[in-house]
View 1: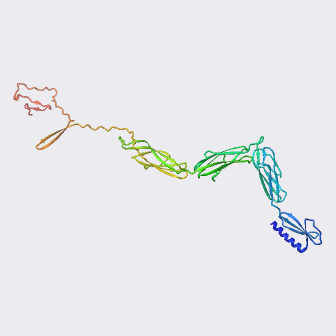
View 2: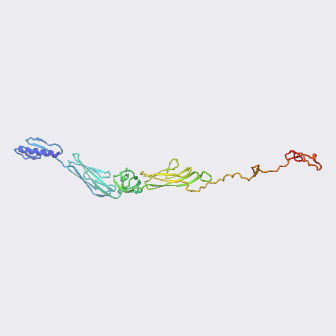
View 3: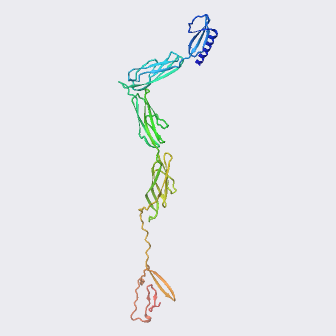
Length: 418
């Protein structure tokens, strides 16, 4: 815009000189002439050109002249001992003087003079910045870095080291990071980035989980109370997890028999185990026992079976990345010899010999069986109490014979007839 104004007025003045023969002069003093003269005054800033006729009839023009942009430079020593004043120099160009100065020495101290002196109380690298303002409100800046070395009574420079508990492994890999700051002036502020675009941390020590294979650079920053900063890095290598696989196995713990001869069992306690390889921990386990009972969970599990084997137990394993693997095992007694108590069966009733009598009557065979368990006993005579058995008299004959009493007490004739 300023350049356009200057060009426009240059054209106007050229026309005036050609048409009027005016004598151009710069500044307030000009050569006198019979011809009218035009005085041109340079005006710094952005005001438009103005013109006015003086008392002597001369035309005075005030033409704005564009200014160069404001710029600033800062100079100082690259290093200095701790506690020793270091000198800094500021330079400004362009813009519209006068200038104002603003220094920040990176340790919280400031200055407002063009060429200040400053002594640092702690070692380290400091960024010194300068801002220059002109009378038109323009701002320009510059900066430099100075390294302050150790000195008597000087705080050591701020530094930090970083390590990782496990810097390599398969995904997902959880890494615990440790940092140790030293020097500077506490309190310290920390900031972590982990190189994978994940969430940052603002604690001295941090933990981060890497879910994708690759190489990563974790970095920690520390700032002290003087505004000093230091950082350290840790390299982390994450490999892709091998394919997930699982193998199921079983072991019979004990068996309860369902019969005295152990030809079957009423219950069998079995230990089921899953051996996992590959995949990404942690893992989840889901067991189907194959006997209609609800599923179970766990890498190692015990289950009580009832009924007759075999059964088919199946385990499904899922890893942290969603991978799945399945294995099954046949649950059986596997020819185990059960140590079941043998209870003797009750003794059967004894079988005694039987006497078989065959009789043939009129062409018909009659079979008579008499058990030997029936003991034949002799009958003995029963004497009524208080009664003597009569003995026949040798001299008694015929009708003089007395009746005999059979063993059952019946009276019989001497000839045996009743």
